Picture 1 (tube, rainbow, N blue to C red):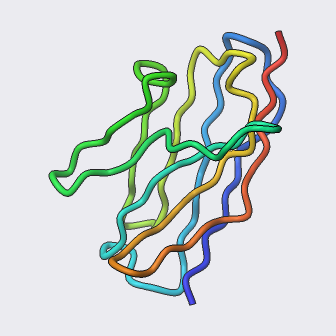
Picture 2 (cartoon, rainbow, N blue to C red):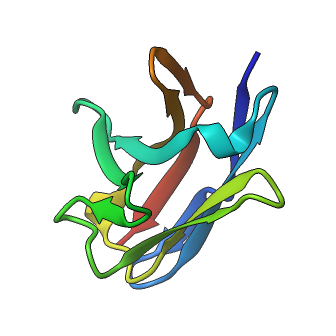
Length: 115
């Protein structure tokens, strides 16, 4: 059974940076497309960064130029480097792994940006 464990969230001031990690286990990591989502209080979960089949990454307009997705297949881990954080980035951030009909979620990590 695939498991995803996020870490790295916390409280940061506006303009600061955080790096989230998502550790993958229980499957063949290289076979899964990975993505990051977030869900702010009272809002729907939104996709913010996802890998494409061509090896690039698509970002939501709200984070483009500030967030960077990366993947380390040797560590079965994906990362989300978040710079120039804004109060509107406050949310629970979730890691997602997908392969054909299989979808897995992590438990989420809270990011709070104070203004």
